[in-house]
Image 1 (cartoon, rainbow, N blue to C red):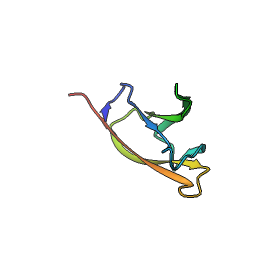
Image 2: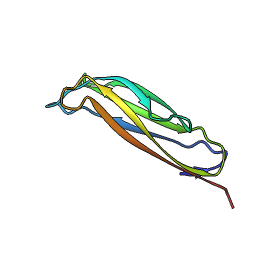
Image 3: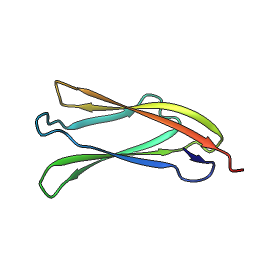
Image 4: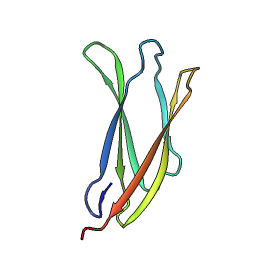
Length: 93
C-alpha cells in the first residue's frame, strides 16, 4: 500500500526447511502487468541457501490490483509455491 508517485516495494525471505530442502528453479507472475519482481539466492554464513523475493509496484495511478507470483521448485512435495500480491495505490490528500 502506498501513494501515487512514491516507490512501493516489499521483500520477503524464502527459507527451505532443513527436513524438506528445495531449490527455486523458476519464477513468473500470473499477470505481471502492475508489478516487477526479482528473486535473489543468498548463501548464509552457515552455507544454507535462502531466497529473497522483491516485488515492486509499476502502476502510477490510483487503483487496487491483485497478482500471484509462482515459484517453481525442484521439490516433489511442493513443486510450485504461490505468493499472493495485493496492491492499493492511493492519492495523497
